[in-house]
Length: 309
Image 1 (cartoon, rainbow, N blue to C red):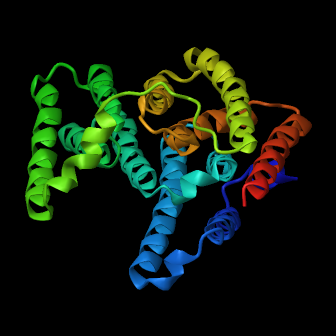
Image 2 (cartoon, rainbow, N blue to C red):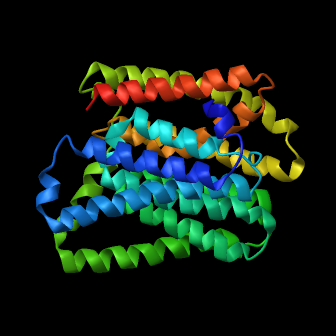
């Protein structure tokens, strides 16, 4: 049923996903209503909801615009299910903002294959990655994807190798100007995040532990066939799919290295894994397999979500 509904890219699908996101978002916020007492916190929560919705739309845009899947809505609905599976993501403002910036960067890097305005795209992608780093330091890992993209498409022009450093300088100037105005405490969270941590004993309840185990199984189910299938993709799409794979691996690295980690740090893997999942689902000839996978993920995600309310 669910797989059939989202097997096409139709406006009604976006409405269903958008309404579901709003319901899951505010239902989780009901756990702690102190934010409703202050107008600026209400505005902040609404802004984060807009960024979450924007993250879904950017993921869908990347997928369909660059033909990473066929004309379906699997990627964005899987992204939604991952958010529901890890509801702590819904209240982690730094992760929401950083992940949105990384998706904007990924959009520019995937489109680099057209070779239209490559310098602007390299600068934009680098700028968004360094901007994301201000909200979560280990997003800096994504800058490797910029250089990988340069190798794939525009390595012969030496100026392209310099552009990421110009973007770093631009973001650095803005950051230090704001820091000088806001005071030295503005820099504290960056300093706290620089030291890596491999402590994975952060679970607040058993459902968070179960969610991580299920997510790992889903990742294996989607990533394995995806890696094998890249060589069989059209030649003009192979570089894009390799970037998706690397962005997934970068997301895992960010999660692994982050200090004071929790399951919300896996948000950096949601979009690339959702795109991999879209490829997996459309590659299944048996519609019952597709239904079983989509409905199974949805049921498990909603159950774990409800148990954490």
